[in-house]
Length: 196
Image (cartoon, rainbow, N blue to C red; front, side, top):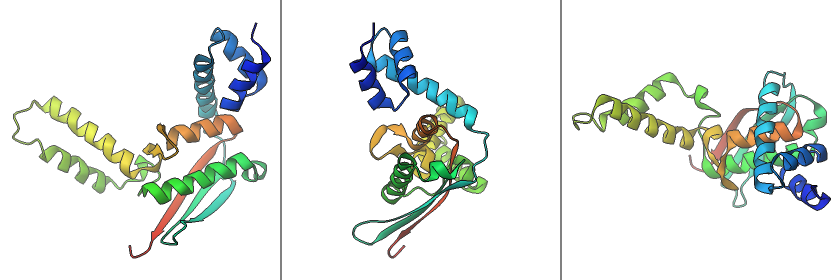
């Protein structure tokens, strides 16, 4: 039998409903870590189903770093005005503004990278190993790894979250969609830095 204290602890960790927490704990044999992982996987599956729903509401967050030398505007869309006013949604959008100020991404996602920029990056990564004698398939794997690292630097959704480096912004977005229960989309952002 799963006690209410354990259910409450899982609920505070995951923000999932009581019934979902109880089911996950029963499925995990009372193990909190396994139950939290189960809820996370179910949440991401739910988030995937919500991905096609229209996002016509949202929030534009403005953030200026304390020293006044970096400023960010980020637009995040959601399905309803109710969620746009939700404290959890607002906190998420604010965290995104902090992320953009700190990590300076250039694009929202990989699809936003101009093809010529991506091709140039691919060429530069490949040229490094030209004439090295390494087999072509090995070079291709190295280039693919370098491109993944590039994406993690320049694409917001691929960046590690500054408050929890084990989670990317894309994964955080999926978790928030699952927790809040609405489709969300990071539409665009702009980052200003004094002198840039």
